[in-house]
Length: 104
Image (tube, rainbow, N blue to C red):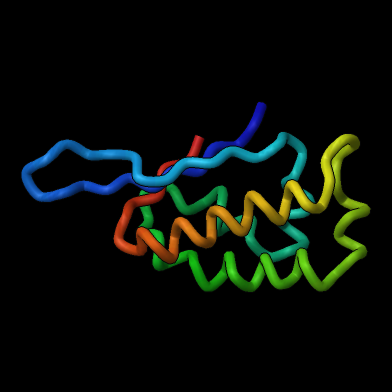
């Protein structure tokens, strides 16, 4: 089962809207733990995006700099895929910094 990360914006007087959504391959928990982003991804439900963006940026640096993390990837998943997901989530949190995080 894949992991989905969403950012939801509650505009004044209007309905809540998903302003960002991306999903990752299953089996990446060991990579996220080693990169230091597990809590920012999995334990952030209900938090504001700006609260996790620094941790996500740090984790993205770890993925780009530490080649040994590739050994934690599940079969069939590339480091490029993990980096793409984390980069998209980080960018979404930066652009929509006041949006609320929703995970599933």
